[in-house]
Length: 278
Image 1 (cartoon, rainbow, N blue to C red):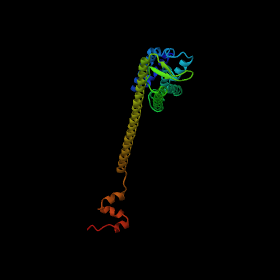
Image 2 (image 1 turned 45 degrees about the vertical axis):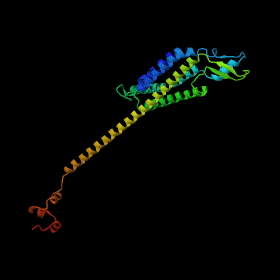
Image 3 (image 1 turned 90 degrees about the horizontal axis):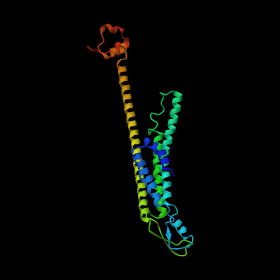
Image 4 (image 1 turned 90 degrees about the vertical axis):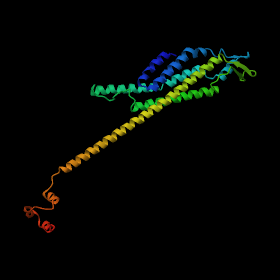
């Protein structure tokens, strides 16, 4: 498998990842892919040939090896690395989709028009895509660890296994080649996978908390804007009330002592109801 092409394909993910995402990608390529390519493949080079059984019965060694190693560790890890890195391509494809929409929008409305402030910024749909990719990666890591533990009953590799599968004539002792090296690399790869799970969980918590903080800031900004708007409307309504023109009768009602030269202008019923001030 050409891991260099695979690494070049995922190199663009760093531009859109958080700090936890960059650490996760470094762990995957340095502690998993590099160890897999440089050392693990050689340790598991021809494991079936190194699987020795104390019998000459034809087919017994092959059947016992298939019974204890139904899936090779090295092939299972290769499949795990492919599956666990593929969800990151969802983010790259979403950004490419945004770039294409932005290009069409520029062609239609001019270069100054903008559909997105930044096509790689994790807002809106891209935030959900990034969060979904983290959940998928975490689920894949946990699933492969469960499969590895389920197939081999544990992550421990014994030096000697006893086989009673047909066509073996009786209980046969079989010896695994390089058991210590294989055990060390198994624990190392399981530990690296567990570290990636922790990084994914930390990134999920960070991304969700950052999204909640952004929503809270938007709500506070909206409440502040509404409060300022209501205050502005209230001040404008009071200033309008103070500048409204008053009629002659409204002004006279504010002063109970009506001048004599204005008494003639008042209606008769108002003269009758006026109080005797003397």
